[in-house]
Image (cartoon, rainbow, N blue to C red; front, side, top):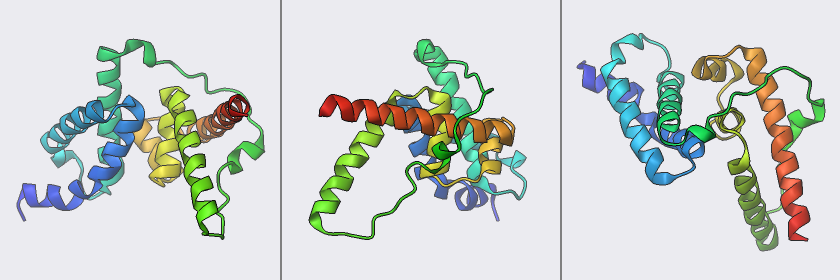
Length: 180
């Protein structure tokens, strides 16, 4: 099998996940497209380093690094170092995991409004928290895969997820208070 065919089989299927991560980190569709294009070029260039591992975390690590390089060049004020020490309450781990069993039109409208509120609040978070939340909650990567993609220890992944969820909850509550 040719190198291109192997690349198409193991990396290209993760294009949507790559765009999703880039979109949340850059907060702009056009910038995300540019970043993903650059990331795919890099991925193809270094495809031989993938070995036989899962292409998704490998690709997302390239997308993440490409995003941060792009952000440092184009929006340096948005790249903020995170303080990963400290404790966040355990209840922050369970935020956003309820799933409604009802699917009537009223619930659908409420869920749509809630989704918009969550997306807006997520946009406000620092990129480091936003990225782990997107990888875990939207892309459903494991803690180990997130650690691999972000190049941080699993404990840091868990800490950032807990803090990110807590910040997200606070941002949602703040938006809800403003709306009422």
